[in-house]
Length: 372
Image (cartoon, rainbow, N blue to C red):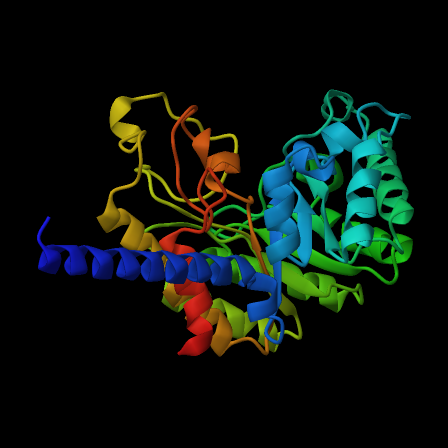
């Protein structure tokens, strides 16, 4: 090989080594970034945790949780069908583990949820006597909220009690106990857990009609002299269709009622769907057209997702004086409930971390909002 080419080769090798070294340093720097540290002065950053994560059986997930999150919500294990499977039987094993995990790792735990029409134990649905159902309702709140009264930070006391038009959902709780059941749930929770923050949680309650119903429901609780500390906007939105104006108006209106505002189940769906909302009872038959990205997300959609998350966090930062928590509904894309709802077996990409727990472009856009 001629001398000049040899010198060129040497320079190329040196440049490659330097570039590789810089790349390694860059990757190392990214590993040191942390959502909870970046937004430490703004609001808490949470995630939903499943059973494997609570029991620390998923090492990669655990590393991401400890690095990025200072708040956590159990995905399922505090719902009534699991924690209260029979009339006089309570299963606190996993909930206790979650509380212990939070204490060990300085992560605040949000209890989810005391009263919800879905994922109820079979025995509760079969109670016909109003008096017996009221006894179940009272005992459940007293027992569960009371057990964790000094151990968890907050409770979603009532979940999804409203229809899309803001009227009360015709749930088993409404049919058995009447439209005061929400106020009564907060009254019981406040007595059982006097130091725990108490929230009402729902999806689409940033939409004008449902927001109006949510405000009326909360005002009813307040007018009864019952404590309610905040309202959770779940934040199940769709890429390219995030309702930023309605979200901002909702933050302002809820905060004006003296409430803390939190985004409790944040994800941005990228797959096609013919309806809005997050009603777990809605199902759609499988169709290849509804699962268009089984092998990866096109760059154009990836960038739209990143841009939506960036705009969303800019909005959150604008109103950081009113927002106390932003919780993602899952640690990574593979965990997301949107892989199986409303169509089972789809490949969805709604979160900041991919299936290998690598940060996505959306992650870096979110982190970048603190520098703008």
